[in-house]
Length: 558
Ligand code: TEU
Ligand code: CA
Image (tube, rainbow, N blue to C red; front, side, top):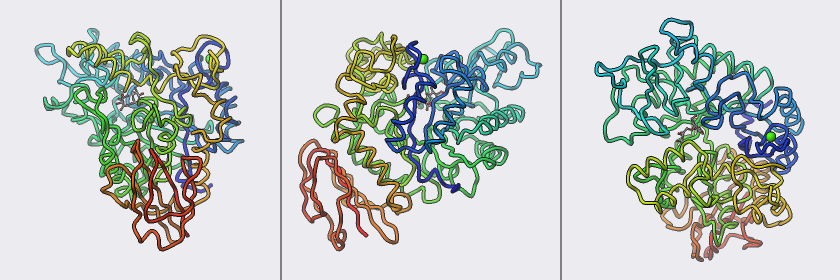
């Protein structure tokens, strides 16, 4: 197998509890995924990334793992998981799992033991610190989901660190026994046949051992970045993991790297450093942040988006990019970056086009291929996500009015992405025969898989074509990236060029017609239209074009 197979792959992210329920309990499961493999094979994807399916009390939907070796019974059994691997592999689809090793659940036996005393076998598996002389936590770090990042345990007379919920204690990576236990667990899953890992908040595993206070001007829920992101030993740890585990399996590894810029990303992904294949950065996710971070109603600016994505395209010459618009932590892409009303279909296709023709490995989050938009829940009580629930409290405490709270939760809640997959337009969406664990999107009757498959102009078929283009034209994998008309305020346009071919990608972010002038240098050769997001478009590139709302065009030259 080609060592760099992941460069040619398209990854499809499955949020297991919301993909397909096979037994009527309202929760998606492994058998459900197995039943939908043919759907994914038709779409053309190469790899499935599964969010965590391990044993978990589900305080943070599985990102709180209580046993790394067990499948959570709500999803099925280990045998069913093996069957999923076999059937996916038979269709040429690989499977990567989530690796959540910055923290465990507080129900994990390691933590249950660790909190008992300062001297047991697991005493140093977590990060324990004495209180300040006045009893306060060791420093001023806040946790991602609100409140202090430290929780006091009277029995040990110490605080433990949790960068996320207090039920998610951080592991102590300084302890070589912790690292050995993690590597052993990783080998277990590789031996079972998985094809790689998406590594949860991997940029946070190495903490600056001073544990000093974060500067007061940083946002409280993320101020721990100061001493915990891209910490002193993070590259040493990942290199060690690579030597001890990853180098022995031809795998895809993608690190989720909060607070990591493009220079730091090179350190993670430069193949000569033997750490990871690629990382998920957040720079484009931050373009619409405001006073409460993600929970703001600021709208992104296309010119900022173009600068940020281009910076990563240029910088990661040595490493490799991962390309995404959305995932289980983010709102729906078409609502956030497109127009989810008048031009939902056109703008969803445009966003797909812009991203999939870039250099890197594209990730599709389930439902994105249908152009799903944010789910307008009727009341705040319908939200289930721990981040959303805590954020509602924070916003109320900060005195924000009801309308503002509703607006930003609707715009940014993680539950927007987590509503069950609409397989058809009926009341149960063919997702379950029971009651879904999280409310369906009210859009299901009109945005669903049956509808998409029946309409040859659907977003689904556009994604299928994008994937096919990536497979057919090597320039999508290896071509260099260059912007043209880079000061246009409405149109994002770039080329990909290798020795023998050129791709020209033109994407409008405007809801009106716009004039667009193509530079002469791009008109010297004949070009052929490869893809449009309208039923038809001009077959050849011309010097003066009028782009329709959210129009996206791909031309090819050789
Ligand atoms: O997310 C890490 C991360 O950066 C989040 O804090 C992110 O900022 C937040 O979800 C944005 O709203 C990962 C997982 O993807 C997420 O689902 C988990 O809750 C988190 O780690 C803890 O494991
Ligand atoms: Ca089920």
